[in-house]
Image 1 (cartoon, rainbow, N blue to C red):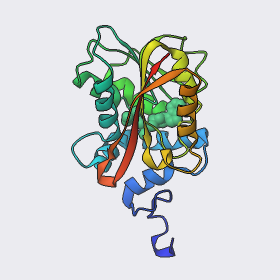
Image 2: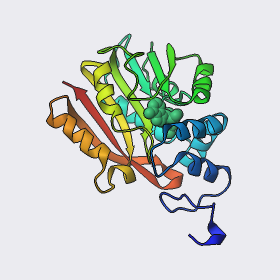
Image 3: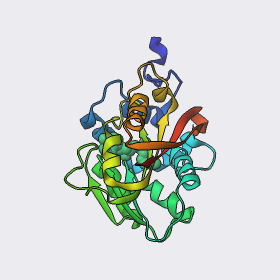
Image 4: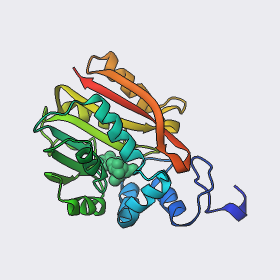
Length: 234
Ligand SMILES: C[S@@+](CC[C@H](N)C(=O)[O-])C[C@H]1O[C@@H](n2cnc3c(N)ncnc32)[C@H](O)[C@@H]1O
């Protein structure tokens, strides 16, 4: 990085990102996992998060939230009174997207490590409960076999939600329930990718079956893609 561009580059993927969006990138995308730092970053940007997401998507959608819930809707059949966990709920865009895709009436619970993001989600008035907690440390607040499906949109990014959240998603999902999530492509494809190894280990151990996996748009204006994965709990 030359000094002229210092502070203007997404230090992870090497793209030029200027202004408030660049600041958001640099705050939330870390090179080491530090949940305290992540919490501070999301707290700082909570009020502008939806706006940033729309700008990064650039196609009139909410980007990663939209594409993950769309993928979810191709896999998870509409059922009445479904209980869904929105893991890393953020400002609650996932709930809005699920409602617009016809998942209604919706019984949805959100968990996030940022209280300010949760406060934004609360304002939507569509979540049955919102919990301030960090995956995988959710044993005390989420009962086992509780949900018909887990949605995690945008959680698995650079040093963001840890791969150890996946076994916790399995614990809280009933047998034959669904777990649907996105993994930023560059994270999935990095050498010795922990998330990729965990996904495959969980299948090899008979905890879930991978039902579908596809690469697609995530933040189109930013040129970022994701791997979308849907699993069924055994
Ligand atoms: C990119 S945002 C996505 C938010 C929302 N799902 C959406 O689609 O807009 C990722 C969210 O995951 C939350 N998060 C990251 N790691 C987490 C963890 N270990 N436990 C709970 N929440 C986490 C962050 O605070 C942030 O709100």
